[in-house]
Length: 117
Length: 251
Image 1 (spheres, rainbow over the protein chains, first blue to last red):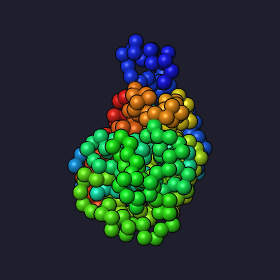
Image 2: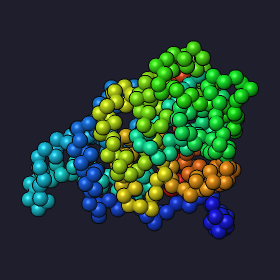
Image 3: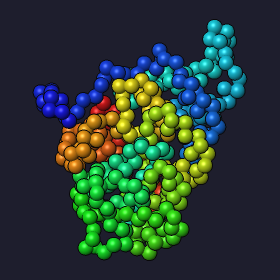
Image 4: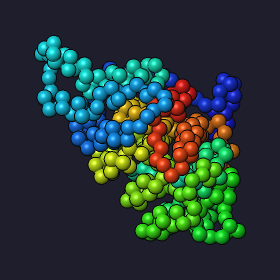
């Protein structure tokens, strides 16, 4: 660590520095195509399947995660329906949209705003 | 004795860095730790502040040849990846016997994934080191497709060298976190003090005791301590996600 950084941290009474100003705002961002491609890949379901196969008694409560709330497999099935324009959504489709990949990003955004990411 | 395998999807992820600091954390928790490197091109000594020219003694070398750093026994077995009897050898040497006071951390290079797959079923825990980067993420489906369900279920994860100032890095990290859930033990922030410590030939804890990366990797090591309580049985972080939560709070 450079001496000026060391001196600054000493003056702040901290031993490290995190860039809080770079917090995520997922709701304002587009999904990266690579993430979308990965979510379409059925091989990622192995994570869910392994989780089920290894189910063991858990002493502490599980951390709330989107993956835990909804298996990745259900995300893939929604992709099969093809893209749907937002302004053409029926009420049912709006319900489905609430569970799509972007819902995952909104969930991540919430986690970020709570400082859990 | 608990065996812990430290491996990764892609070279350059910092597997050796994490393995070294995992060993240090377990040693500080009171375990008698041996680090075993199976890499023919090895940088393990640098993470302990040792000279780069140092060649680690063989796993089978006598005690008088041992290299001890921070109370940790550093060993190598360069033919382990080609040795079909590696696991029986560990068994014969008592490394798989019950007992939580002795630990072996095996540093497996990313390209030796077949070796990792072979050892993981016998390990108490295994930690897969990832970078929050698109090329690493792109390998995930292939790796998950090749691995057995049992090995995947036993795998815990850590994100290394995370640059939280970069949007893509944050998003990739969030993706990994959502994908693996509580099995993500934590993340290690990108920190220039890590290469600087190596350049200074000093352990990170001495060169930069206030390093953010050091605090993060220590938290991951501490999260693995419960794995020592079930030597010989696979352990998976579930539920509390202690290190990840601690890291988030630190940020």
